[in-house]
Length: 118
Figure (spheres, rainbow, N blue to C red):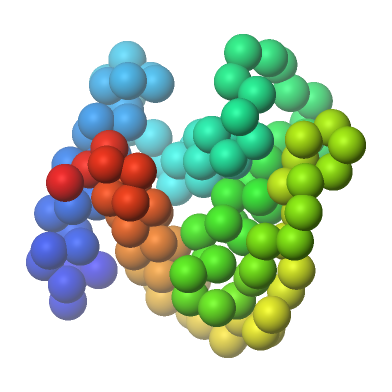
């Protein structure tokens, strides 16, 4: 991420805001941010989730985050209100660091789209 100073700056601002809002200032890991996006996308904010539901929430978030890149397409909501996506294009093989940069870029874009981040 050091190659893109604007992305790095935006990520630091975003992670700071999210940490203050959801973790009493403690730093949030990338997985925690993805989980929060999944909860936001599901829209069922005031409930507890089972372990398998938490994994599904992260999957929803990843699909939603990578949709603008053409990897997934929203398909439908099921009877319980859970969104479902279809894989459009297989993800390229990326190294761990490259995956992290892609996800951070997608997360920053997501929160800019939601006007949470300027």
